[in-house]
Length: 50
Image (cartoon, rainbow, N blue to C red; front, top):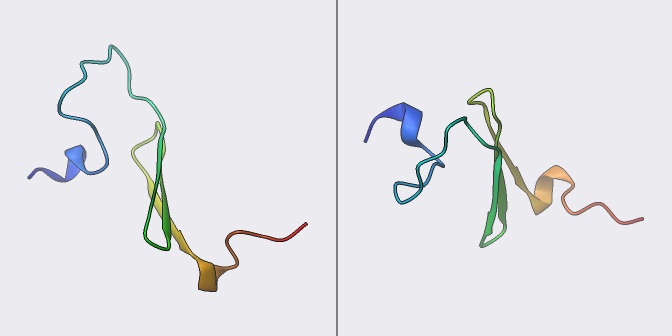
């Protein structure tokens, strides 16, 4: 799988890149419009208590 497809949907055809957020297990993943991938776990301080 090409690295540019990580976190992107194969089933949708967008005109422009879109931000995508997913939460699986204990990991929150955010794929930005700029093609940057951020991953957070509970040990990283997510979710923060208010």
